[in-house]
Length: 295
Image (cartoon, rainbow, N blue to C red; front, side, top):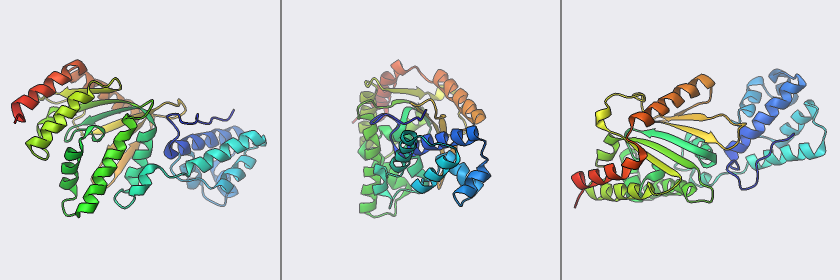
């Protein structure tokens, strides 16, 4: 039976549509006994191209999908059309493509996954999570990494970050569970006035039923995520594996192997235990606001 996401559901972003179609093509290939090499030959390509297609990491040509379906023995017209429509939809650009001039390719992939996630769990050690940043704080962060850029470019980078946050305001938003190191909240990014606005905004965010925010205090000492920040994305469709995202200065790492996922899932669970409970977060933020950023 062909698996097609429901219209308007959480998995309708092009990145996840590619992953869903790739997973379906892999199952069809394996059930028909065709090797990746054989499938690659059929579409005048390589085994590695088939592997990338099945992982959803490249776009799909409708002709290639049609040829593969024929090779895999899919003759039912309704099933073929459903999968070909999935291929067409998977090639539709996401909203972030409008920011291609200031957006590296490796981060475009993340935005597609983030927009389709049902649960976003992140640990941040240096900054407030991007999805919870105020415009002023976001501008200060952008200036740290792009201080030589012109005003127009800075504005576009800030607008991109604000556009990302729309997913928290849509119908059926993802659950966001963020663990933030106390150092990120004490670091005066943009100065006292910007931090006052940011901490006040975080206090307001904790009132949202789909946002959970925890703080790891200095008193916790060393902890499970000493290696740095990371994000775990979980999707509403059980066919899709969780993905761990680790951002670097000029690239990013995406992990989806079971051993890696289990390692980071355990680290995240330990972080949540070592952090102050979510119900204490408004109190902690209020105290930091009063002690360090009061007017």
